[in-house]
Length: 462
Image (cartoon, rainbow, N blue to C red):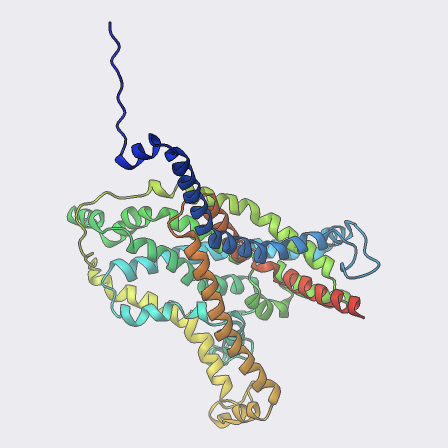
């Protein structure tokens, strides 16, 4: 049987280049130029990724190296040693901080995730009254410093706080202890609800409401729609928020420093802060050792987080032409749901901020002091008389404005470098960027490394 000849048809330009004298050489040169052009176009992306990795991982490398030294690495008496780990592993306060940290992290997740999911469903999928007013208020705990919130709870619900004194006068006793570990866990959980809300609400907005409307047509109640349809469809976002909030719970600093110190409650972040006061001198090697322990704790969570992101594509819905989502009518539960949201806003935002505002306009406060007799502007007058306080306010505003602008610019470049490129470079950049958020509790290590470098440079110059 005669074999069939195989003919190959080439475009006119390529055929002309191949079958004319010197054409193949020109074609090869053109292909090489295209390769060089692609590499040159990818150079800015590589520069952005390298700078990002250096800024994030170099300080972490300093922390790891410092943890295996017997003294700060600018000290002449330093040597390679495991003394730092031996000290913290034999210190009872370390285990107290570790246990309290896990209690706080688990409690924060247990409180914040259900409330965040319910709040996201009510705001995105239902006809909750006052949604336009409530939505910006939900994000207030993210923008207000935890130190300010902690101070607000102290002056509002502390032993001599405004609400504590009013409760004492009404019922004869104060039914809460703001400094107990239980109260700290509840406050931390309530103030971290917006983090869960952001992740879950953004996922709900990206999911069509066709399946929910189908559930409504067969008689499902709003509660059944939420628990059986809406929230299961955004399960990857919920699990991702659980991991993130567990990270944040391990590294809570401001609230724990203000509310936990009076009764000796601490977590690893505040334990880091107190190491210097405990020994009377800067203990950078001990701080670095605790930071390394934090890193080792978070590595399994990082692996779990990446696995959750890998399986996120299984939770998708197939639908037809896009249509506007219709709000789920809550009926008789409409105002009950609104009251629950208002109660959360009152406890999380109203109580601490009202306490701060009242204390700012009161010159003296204590047991038996009349609120109306002490109202004045003396506190603000004293601030204007203190140059250090004015300088602190100006510096804080400058850091917030300039630092925020620089952060937005940096993340803009990182986002452009990762935009629609699902390759290993993008995965590496994503991990690097999230590492900064995961290892927030290592901030004393960052500070110690920078301070050590400055001291070392100063000693060399001398």
